[in-house]
Amino acid sequence: MNIEIQNRIKDAGIVAVLIFHEKKEIRPTIEALSSGGVSAIELTLRTPIALEAITIVHTHYPHILCGAGTVLSPRQISDAQKAGADFAVAPGLNRKVMDEAKRMGLPFAPGITTASDIESALEYDCTLLKFFPAEKIGGIAYLKSLNAPYQHLGLSFLPLGGINTANLTSYAKEPIIAGIGGSWIASSSLIAAGDWDAIEKNACSAVKRFREE
Ligand code: 3PG
Image 1 (cartoon, rainbow, N blue to C red):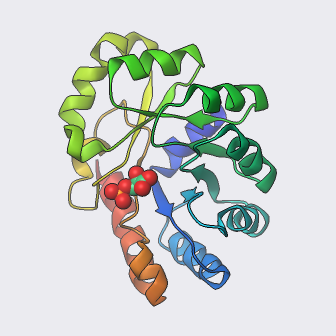
Image 2 (cartoon, rainbow, N blue to C red):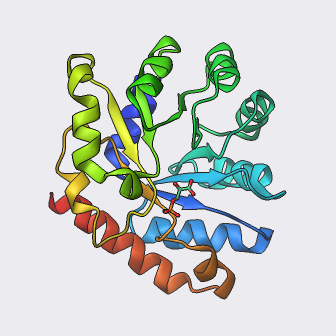
Image 3 (cartoon, rainbow, N blue to C red):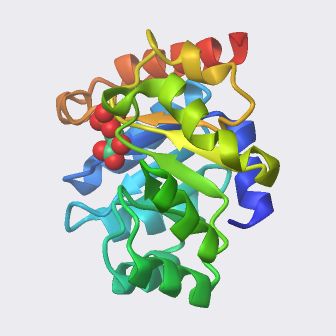
């Protein structure tokens, strides 16, 4: 992972996971997140509009660090890069995807849950790793045990999966955590309801809670 992007994720602290279904949702969601202090997003490639949404964010909100999420194929690496993604993330660890990300020079954080996953990621020079699904698999206690043999390598982790403002504190205080992500800040239901105030409030409280640590 490119160190500049890794540092920008660290500076941002909170990464909002977004799923857009309609074009009209994109700008108000980004503006609400931005007003609430969230400056990094994972825009998931789960809907037909996702790549266009990345381009809109890249063009109109250059201060937002925009990652493509749910990247499952090599083709999606080049599509995300062309659309303007700053980095890419996946729920799992796919060698073809890691190979393409390395070839294209797109900073990439694969999903890991085991020591073998970490070692595979290291083969591709991935040093920022998505820890997913964080809460279900054992939370920060599990992650710290998992990272113990690799501590000298200075890996950073982005935990996602089941995290929210109430439980993010356990992760936020740990130096191995680059940032914390999740869909709760701008959930699909809040976006569909056009509840920009709630998204801004969630963003604000997540950033505040993260910074308190
Ligand atoms: C994802 O890629 O969907 C995320 O990891 C989000 O997980 P969450 O919905 O539990 O926040």
